[in-house]
Length: 529
Image 1: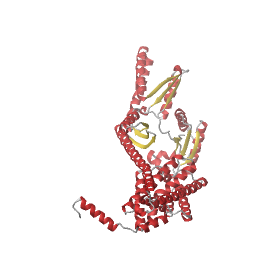
Image 2: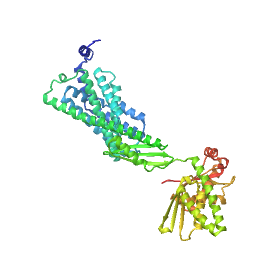
Image 3: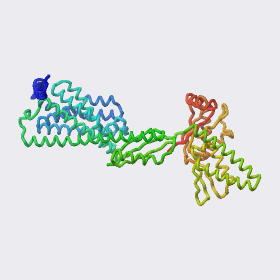
Image 4: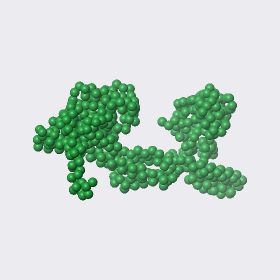
C-alpha cells in the first residue's frame, strides 16, 4: 500500500481507472431505453399503484410488497440521475416527462379506488407515510446507490427496482388517498415524503454515476448553456432535500428534549408519563401528555413549559393532564382519622345536650374541628348568598359513596330548611349490588345501594351507565339480575346503555379479587361521553 497521501491518491486513481471502467455507451443506451415512456410503462404504473392503494386501505404489508414487485419507477429515476451526471438536458427532459406521467396516472388510479372504496379511514400503514424522517431518507439514498450500481454493472436490476419502489410507490398512493378523502395534511405529508425520496434517489444515482466515470464526454451534444441550466437545476433540486434533513433533525432533537424534560419532571413528583404527543404549529411546539401522579401539581405544566423553552429556544405550549393514583396506606390512615373525628364530634354533641355552658364551648370546638376537617377532606363552597352550599370531598376523606350520601342527608336534616347542602363524593368505583343465592330479587339493602349509585352519578353529572351481572357462569340468572338492576336505574332517571351477563371466566376473576360473595353481584359502571 502507498505510504504518502500523494502516492495513495495516484494509486486510487489508477485502481479506479482499471476496475471501474464499464462500457459507458452501452450503459447510457440501456438507461435511455429503461426510462422511455410507453404503453407498458403506463399500464404497469396503474397496476402497481392500484395494488399499493388496496394494500394501504387493508393495512396489508404483503399486498404493498406485491405492488413494489411490478413498479416500473426505477427506469425514469435512474435516467434522471444519469442525465444529471452526464449533463444531458434532453435525457433529463425525457426522464421528467416520464416521471410526471407516472405520477399523474398513479394519483388518478389511487384517488379513483379510494372514492369507490368503503374503507376510507387512515390505517397505520397510511399514517406511517405522512411525514418523512431520517430513516426514510436513508432508505431512499441506499436505494439510489444500489440502483445506480445495478444499472452500471447490469446485475440485480429487478431486485433493486423493488427497493426504489419501496421508497416511492406507497407515499404516492398515500398522497392520492389524502386527496380523495380531502385530508390535505395526509396528502401534503405523503407528497413531501415522495418528493424527498425521489430527489434523494436521483441524486444518489448521480453520485454513483460520477464515481464510475460518467460525465460530460458521454453527451457529445452538450453546450455550455445546457450545462449551466442542468447544474442550476441540480442545485435547486438539492434545496428541498437539505430543508427536509434540517427539519427532520430539528424534529428529532425537539422530541428527545421534550421526552427528557417530561421524564425528569415526572420523577420529581414520583409519577410517570404514560402518553406523549409532540406537534408543531409554525414556531410553537405543542406538547400533549398524560401524567400519573399521587398528588396534584397545578404548577407543573408552566414549569415544564419554561424548561422546554430554555432547552429548545422557541415557544412551547404544554397540555398536561394529571391522573391521580391511589395511595392505600394514606387512604387507610385517613379513614382511621375520620372515624376518630366522628367519635370526637359525637362526644362533643352529647356534652352539649347536658350543659348549656359546656354546649357553647363544645360548639366552638366543633366549629374549629369542622374547619380543619373541611380544609383536609375537601373544598366547601357557599353559593347563592348562603342559601346553597357544596362540599366536594377529596379522596383523602376516605368516605365511600354510601357514607357520603348519609353525610349529605344528615347535614340537610340538621340545617336550615331554606338552605340546600350538597355533598359531592370523591371519584371512585360504584358499589356492587348483592343478591341472594339463585335469586334476582332486589332486597332492601340493594334498594339502598341503588339510591346511593343514582345519587353519586347525579353529583358527578353522569347520566349513562352500563350494567354487568354475575352468577358464576349461570348466564340466564346473571342476565336476569342485570335486567332488574337496569330497570331500577332507569326508574331513577339514568340512561342504561347496556345490561349484560358476565361469563364464567369473568365471574371467576371477580371472585378471586373480591371473595366468594362476588358470585352473586351486579356491577354498575358510568359511561363517559
